[in-house]
Amino acid sequence: MALLFGAVILLAGRPGVAASYPYGIWVEAEGPNQTLDDLGRLEAMIVAAANAGITNLYLQVYRGGRSWYASDLADDDPYRRAVARQRYDPLQFALGLAHSKGLRVHAWMNLFNLGNRREGPVQAGLGPAAFTRDNRGRSLLDYDFSRPPGDEGKSLMLDTPGYWLDPGDSQVQAALTALIEELVSRYPGLDGVHFDYIRYPYGIPTVPGSRYSNGLDFGYGERSVARFQAETGFSAFAAKDDPSVAQRWDEWRREQLGRFLRHVRVQLRRLKRDLTLSAALLAWPDRAYLSAYQDWRHWLEEGLLDQGIVMNYTRDGRLARYISRQAVGFRGRSKLFVGLGAYAFLDQPDLLVRQIRDARQEGADGVVLFSYDNLLKRESLLQRLGVFLKR
Image (cartoon, rainbow, N blue to C red; front, side, top):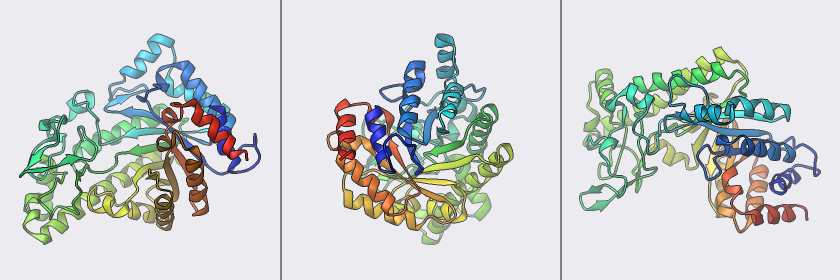
């Protein structure tokens, strides 16, 4: 592990000297290594990162309604297991050790996506109506994720199979805001909060908005549809037949995410003014805007995020460079980090190094690697990457 992280340092300067350029790594809670579930593995990760000059840890502490920190609102069984088995608080331990070694810790939270967990305190408190529905009125609770849903003879599928809360549901927004506030209040040492899945799900093949009714489109939760009609006088289900309604409905969904982000930002600033707010963003800005209603270009322009991290996951080096260049151009009042998929380079670490260099040359404010668990899969990857960068 030290070879890999030490190699990353060489991009910024002399070996063994802490890099001034921000490098980060996503650390999964439920990946193959289950880093947060074992004190020794958690300590090994932090020590390796510190020795290498990694500056930012994006530590996954909330996923599928479960928390790896003390919570009264989420299912904190992972936290309680750690306390019972090894008598340690995973997040508190990580904060203490990481800070002692000069690393910043961002609490990574999967927001509207619940993965394969349809049950838990968060889900039960909100009730079935909180789960999003598609443009046929079908709740995701009724989906069979073992096979794509059939639709008029066409095979369609969800981009990220699993259960999603409806982003336009004000009760969902309030519940997630309460979770985030609880986390920051109980762990004031946090340097940042990092949001993942702050968007709507979308169907594959993708469709550009609600007007194209032959595809899958989401966000038609019961309370969202009712609120849209109360505010505009129109039914969301009329969007497929009326372009003007489609435009208003799609804009309404984009604004729900922006509204949620603005509110959370204000609340967090009251709790800790210097807290860094970041989010993982879809690499394709038009798809994000049209299909996932994630208008991240506007978020960056408005400065709603301190860091926008574009998930630039591709083996195609030229495409990766194009994506990085385009993303940096939308930086606005926020910093623009590029996230790279290290999992795609298990046998060719030189290609990963090239993408890191390209992101820096295109003007990215930082680079984040996905993920720690993937980088552990092959020791040969760490060795070869280290040798390559020392040439």
